[in-house]
Image (cartoon, rainbow, N blue to C red; front, side):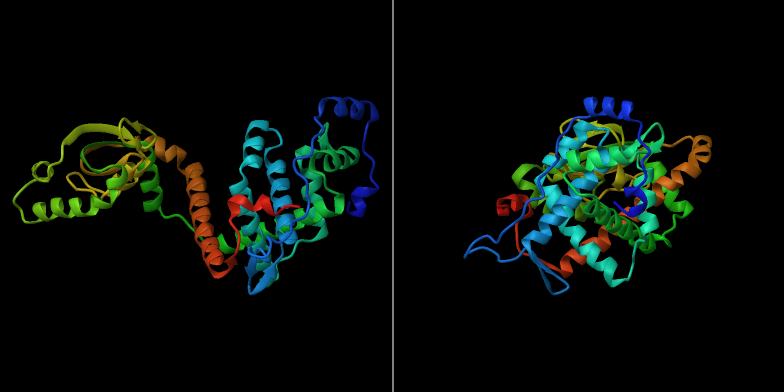
Length: 340
C-alpha cells in the first residue's frame, strides 16, 4: 500500500468477521508467467515502437486487464464471469493496454500518488459503511485479486494515466445541433420502406453487381425502384415499418437499415445494406417523426450521451492506428497456451 493507506486502520473487527463469511474468497486469475512458443514459434509477443514485448510483460498486462474488469464489475458476477472467460477479448485489451501505456509515457502523462490514493479510497469495493477500510482492501487484494498492494497501485497508476491521455485526446470533440438531431432521429423515428433482398449467405459477393443493375436501370429513367427490382429478378417486399431497436423477421437487427435511412429523404433509394441474413436495398417511403417537445426536454442529457459516443469512436480510430503502427506476433485468441 501507499504509506498513507498502509498505516491507517479504520476497521471494526466485528463487521470485518461477518464480511469474511459472506465474501467469496476466489482469485480471478493466476498471474503466472509466459514462455516463448518453441523453436518454430515466436520468441516474443510483438514489438511496440520497435521494442520487443516479452511474454512475461504481456502476462502482466493480462493480469492488469482482469484486475480492471473485476474493479468495474465486482457487483455483477454474471457479467464478470463472462468477461473473464472471454480469452480473445482479454488478450486484445491486454495488447492495447501495453500500446497505450507506451503512448502515455511518450506523451509524458503521469499519475501522482495523491490521484492513486483518491481512486483507491473512493472505490466502493474497498468501503464499509461508507468509509475506506484498510483490512478489507488488503483482504480483497490477497484473496480475490491475487495481487500485492504495490502491484495493484501501479495498475491503478497506469489506468489513471491512460484515462488522462484519453481525455486529452478527446477534449475538443463537440457535437453540433445537426449531429444531435440526426442521432436522436435515428433512435426515435420509425421508418417505412419497401425492399429487395439482393443476396444472402455465400452469395453476398454478388450484391454489388445486382445493385448496379438496379441503379443503372433507374438512372436511365425507364423504371421506378419497384419495377427495376422485378426486372432484376428480385422479389419486392414491404411496406415495412420499423425502428432502430427492432428485429426484422428474415433479415436481422434493424440498426444498419435505420443508420442508412436517417441520411435519406422520402423516395430515396439506399446503397446496399448488410444485414445478419443477407444484403438488401430499400426505398424510403415515409418516416414517422419524433416528438419535438420531448427532444427539447431530453436534449441536455442526450447531448452528453452523443458526446461520449463521438469520443469513443474517435478513440477507437486512434487506437486502431496505433495497433497498425506496431507488430503483434501471436494469436490473441490462444495466448494462454504460452503460459507455463
